[in-house]
Each structure stands twice: as C-alpha cells, then as structure tokens.
Length: 107
Length: 114
Image (cartoon, rainbow over all chains, first blue to last red):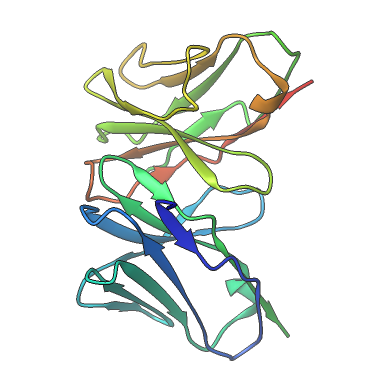
C-alpha cells in the first residue's frame, strides 16, 4: 500500500465552482498533515496545514479524519489562479508526498 | 521573507560525471531535506539531515549520493557518477522541526544527464 494516495484527477471545473478531493495515508503514527500546491515545473509551496478539528483559510477548507486516515481539501468559488496540482503531505520524520491532484479551473 | 535558495537552477552534465547541487536553507532551521521529482512523477524523498548527520534516507539514496553541510549555511547533494535516470528536478527543503512544522522548499535544480 502506498504511503500517501490521492485521486489524480484531473478535476476540470468552471470558475466559481466548488471542488473537493481526498487523500488517504497508511501510517497511523503520522504526526502532521499539509496541503501543498505545485505549479508546473515549480517547487511545492505550502497551502495550509491540516488540523484534526478542520480548518479554513479563505476559500480553502481542510479536514482530517485520523480514524479513517484521510485528509480532504475543498476549494470554494474557484478562481483561474487555483489551477495547479495539489499535493497531500504527511509527516513523521520526513515529508511523504502523494502523487498530486490536478485541478484546472476554466473561464 | 526567509527562503531556501538553490544553485544552479539548471545543470546539464554528461553521464558518469559528478555533480554537486547546492542549497542554502533558512537560517534558523535545523532539519534539511533533499527530494527529487522526475518529470511527470511524484515528489520523492531522498534524505533528511539533522545535527550534521543523515537521519533518514530512502532506497533511492544509494552509494552514488552523498550530502554534506560544509559550513554553517550550505547544504549540498553530490551525485558521484550520474546516470541518465538521475535526470530530474532536485528540491532542497528545510524546517525548524521534524514531524510537526512545515517544510519550505527551494526553487529546485533541474538536472539533465546526457
């Protein structure tokens, strides 16, 4: 079983739409969880941390379910600039990356 | 805003040659990492480094790879005898802790082995 698995997408959505996708992880001892964003041929950049209580950052909402070992990201009111690959990241002594979920927001 | 810097941004080398990729982590960070991403594939962990020694390494990080922190600021990845399959984007990252704080990534070095 892969350490971190994501739905690869692509999710192709119109501007203004809501898009949501999940990530599952295998190591129940994982300590921290993040969503990173990666634009084409660029470095991963932290989008947001994910907390057990769930957290929001503007149009982005992240949820963590430790019992089921999954993380979710929801993007409301999608913008063209949200087009990117979203990387689920789980940490113990290192960051383990999912393969990424590609989101394309169209005008 | 503090950032991780990597040099060079692009390196082309002949198969069998040695390359050194350089990174300057964020100054008060203690944990350093190298990752690689082959074009179109996922980001893969290579090695983590703390307190002047390797703390973890992946199966990819075999004997042809080494890391060093030669002074108080630089963190280097050396590939001794490059192979075509080493062609990838190499990212350096640093964090203030492990298992908790987020890591910050440099812009990457694109290594092309010909």
